[in-house]
Each structure stands twice: as C-alpha cells, then as structure tokens.
Image (cartoon, rainbow, N blue to C red; front, side, top):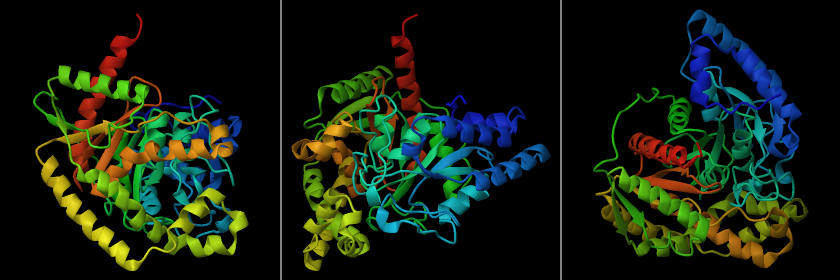
Length: 450
C-alpha cells in the first residue's frame, strides 16, 4: 500500500466533504504499516480492532453530518507511554513488559471523544530518557531520510510513523526536546506545549516538573487542530497577518554556540527570509540561561529517580546500561540541593521573561547538530558523550524557562527552526508559526528548479 502523506487537516476536510471514508482510510494506513519494511522498528504494537471500531463510528457520523470536529476520522499514532485500555503500554522498557492499563490516559480519551482514530503505539527511547532516539533494548526506529542515522528521541517512533506516511500525525511527550528533536530530524512540525496545558494523567512519567505532551505533524495547522483535540477546546480559527513589523530575537547565549555548519546555515537562511518579509530581528543575550542548563540535572534526575531507579536497580539486566548509569549518577542528590536548584531556576525564569517580554517569539536552531550515526553511537562511548549534549541543548532551554515552543522544517533536511513563546501562549505561537511556515515554504518553492 502507498503511504499517505497528506496533512491531518487535509484528510479531515476530505472526510467532511464526503470524499474520503474513515473506514477505508484507516484500513489503508493499517495496510501500509503491514507492508512497510521498517514497521516493526516503528510500531511497538498496533490496535486494529480499536481503530476499525472508531473508524466505523466516524464514518457513520460523517454520513449523518454529525462530525465531532475537524479531525474526526483521522488516524494517528500514540507514543508508547500513553495508557490505552486493554493494550500494553510499556514505556519503551523491558521493565514494564506486559503492563496493560485498564483505562485510557486523559488525552487519549479526549482525542477519542473528538473522533481521532488510534492506530497503535510507537517505539520510543527507554523511559523517555535519551534524546538521540536509540533503544538497543527494544527497537531503534530509522531516520526517514537515512536508516543509518538516528531519528531523534524520545518520541522516535512517533516522528518516523508520520515521516513515512504510516500515521497522519503522532502524539508524543517532551521533557527536554522529545517532540521537537525527532520532528526536526525528520522534517516535521513539532509542538511543545506549556507544562500543565494538557493532562498528564495516565502518561508514564519521567520528570513531573517538566513532562509535557505535544503533536508531531506535517503543518502548523495540524498542530493547532491536534492541540485543540487533545485539550477539548474549540479548533483555532484561521487568521490573516503579516510578519512585517513583528519583533523576534535570536538567543545568542548558548543556543548559537557550537552550532555546526549545516544547522547554522539553515537557521540563518530562515532569518534572512524573515527579515526580507519585514520582521525585525534582534540579537539577545541572557547569560543566566547557561546557568539554568547546568541546574537541570539537579532537578530532572532526582525526579526521574523517584519513578524509575528502584525498578532499574532490581533488574539491571533489563535496562540499557547508559540510562541506568545516568540515573545512578543522580542517586545521591540531596533534597536541599534539589530545592535550591528550583529556587534559582524560578529566579532565572523571572529574568528570562523580563528580557524577552518585548519580542513576539525567541528564535533558535532546534538542534545544533545533525542526526548521529546509529551504529557508532552503540560502539563508540566518546562519540555518544560528544553528540548527546548539543543534540537537545537548545530544546531544553524552553522546558527550563517554562514556555511553549514549536519547531518547523527549514529548507535543509534534518534542520529545524524553533520559535519560543511564554507559558500558555500557544495560540499566539501557532499564529506566528503559521506566518513563518508560509515564508519558509515560499523560500523552498523559489529554490526548486523550474
């Protein structure tokens, strides 16, 4: 079967117009998954009975003119840390083999109530604790452009399911970049929502202070529609606008440091196009951001330990040793150090919000590097140690500062540009991102040979 690479919004419009049957669409996706050579590396398990039941209900609503929303009848995938009643949810780890929840996560239930169809659960980095996307204990999904490269994580299978056209969109989680990094490395749109914007009930945790939920998809429009569906809010209305006079800032502190040539050039090309469209671009230094990055392990690791370290210590042979070692390294953190780190981070957030208040969004490359070699990561510890920090350094800034962010594909494969906005400013962010997306697409079209 031919994979379907239309946007979720386009599929929804076709269903609404009576041109597309949700049952046939869902079956086509399931058939495409079954025929795909990398299907076992992308999907941990499918939910065909549930999907077809949902599709039949969506088709009936469409015929009756009673659709639940613009994405009613559209098939998506779920990262394997969202509980689904009666289907295993294992968090990418052998520690949870056979774990079957008896109820859906809140966002799964909400998406189902909006008519979205769940195709299955996608592979992920073990316990969502590695950003490069490799999981040697279970499966490492291939990068959509080159199977020898890593896909980015921890929502690795989520991104790849969309990139290969094996889902119209995917839902992942983001603690330090786990939606945005795989979205960028597979040329997708990825939305990191504000912490607390969407319910985490029924979602396997990593860091309670930073875990968020977000879509990986093909367009900003999709991201807005999916956010509305997950939160049970009205779909965003189309907005006109222009970039002329909009003030953006490039974060030069840390975010542009050690950015490698190709991601840096892709980012600067986007900045040029925004400037040509009349946007005002400032260069902004916030030195405290570097300090915040140093504080993150003093907060995230103790929180992750509270959920996972005892399980790992009890069965170390069932865990990727590098992840176990990362958790073990933080096992002796004192509560006083954790509280002091949080006190300082809250102060840095206040500094950040004052420094960025006059800008529509803050801009940075989504990742400072290109996807690493998948085989070398497992055999060369020095390479792993070198590639890991810069891969998700920029994305972690948004989580630490408490805001929302979206990554958009640029004209160069594997490279994304990120827009960062304040907490709970997703509506504004999505509007700006739509304008930026249109400008980037014009640039791509102009670069294509005639």
